Length: 341
Image 1 (cartoon, rainbow, N blue to C red):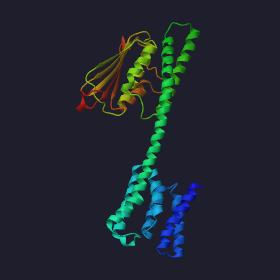
Image 2: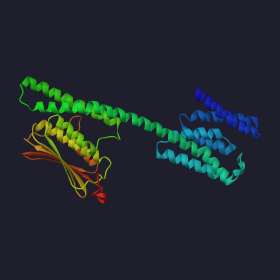
Image 3: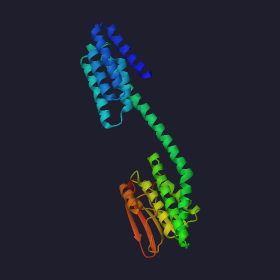
Image 4: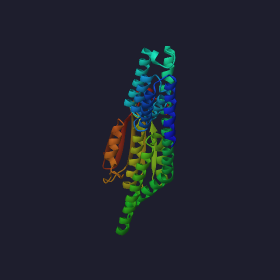
């Protein structure tokens, strides 16, 4: 009902302006129909409706209310470069035409007045529509991030502890019947962790944990009884790629989970070593020849290598007889090496 009232208001407003200018009745009727069609079209095809409004404005010298409404709808739906090009190009063409044939306008033909008309009737509504759309998208993104943080804080740490403790039990000397139960429990815990990370990752695409989350991750494993140390060396520098921080976090997470399962009770060393051109992220633990990826969800070391490669880095696995080491090399910004983190 509100939308119908808006259509009627736009038709009446613009038709009245033409009637006051002395337009013939049959022309007014045709214009009213075209204006109503353009308004209806703006809900599903806003850019086509905006072009139609500009065309009617050129032909009649009016269509002020129609330009404002369709311009707002077009700005509200801008989402790709093509949309921007169409909207800006059509507005510029409208301005150029008015400057060339300003005598057809219902208002004074001075260039500054024509420019002000275009700005008020087209540019400002488009910008207002885009601004309000961005604010709505930002509000929705903030809500998703809030839900993701709540899920991570309430479930993530608990599932991490359960997963680590279940992995420790997997390699403990247990009777065969209990071992199968523990193995199922460990698998279920890791599957739950993988599903939680997938859901949280979907909710917070731009809020994935990075280097700043490694301390909390190490503390979480320590709380579960894992003997892990964190070493830092070299002057801290920003990472060159946007996803490199999250890749470093995943390397540490994978290495700790792997070590907790296959080297339970042994000392684990996590290292962050800033070199002149790369950050070396390492996780090392004693090995017995059985070490392999412990993560689930179809990723493991192969998926981790893809993640590191996507961040511009390289992942290396050193499976020596007495030590298993996971090392990721992630590029840093060379000209700001030495800056504080």
